[in-house]
Image (tube, rainbow, N blue to C red; front, side, top):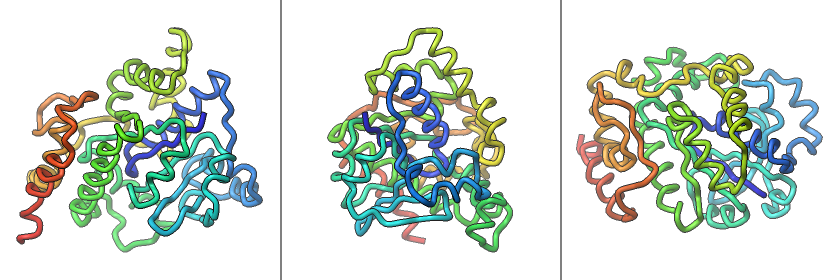
Amino acid sequence: MKILQGGAPKCGNFWLYQIMQQLLSRTGHDTTSFIQTQPIYELARTWDLNYPSQASIDVLDVTDLQYSYRISSIFRMPITDISTYVARTNHVWTHSPICKRSGELLDLFDKKVYIVRDPRDRAISASKYYTSDYMLKYYPQPEKNAERYLEQHFEELMLEWVWHVYDHLRLSRRHNIHIAFYEGFLLDFQQELGRLLDYLELELNRQQREELQEAMSFATLKTKNPKHLKKGQSGYWMDQLTEEQAAKAEMIAGPLIRFLQYPEHKGQPMTYATVWPHQDFEQLKEEIIYSQQPLYQE
């Protein structure tokens, strides 16, 4: 079984990767890795990366012009034959948005899993990550304070999330993409795990599911990956965003936030929808564009 997992950065991709690796391993599936067969791998294991297993993960970047594989933010190489690459791995991680090559890529994998997270929490998490010591070492930039970074980049972080998520939802039925929720694994791990198992057509008994939940708990993973994992919470945007930022989030992402049934206002309980109100994505796109109009009238 060949699995492609995707998601906008800082939406729980690392957590999802660990869960799916555990599922493959515990159900007797091969976890062959392309990058571990490359000459760079042994050297990369000595690098100061963001978490211990980072050098061993098959990370794929996709653009209209090129496929490439990489190790974290440090090493990148082009892929000349994507079919050969996919034949040599069983689990690939990508942050890439939908582009002209995406259809070809999606068709090469048996299963596709895309993780979604509330964009307001994601923006806060991304700001902390982009101002972390690790990122500043490899991608130096003048702003080192996470709150100020969020103020300066909030609009672009929200826009990135909207179109990254929208395009994957739009294509989910055509390409049989399973939509997983970060909040689902946080709030009801077993229910979200059950949805994932059903999609992957894998089986674990009750004891195995409980053991997996313990092994994949945020607290357990954070102990092993302290630089990469921080909060493991949902809804903290309600306390940390200013009223102006919350209003801008509504302007940029409001229609998609409501489509996914995330809370619209501060003080509401965390909710999300695994079943959507409709499949008319052209209508949803029009609603998003209309909502964003004030951005381009200022």
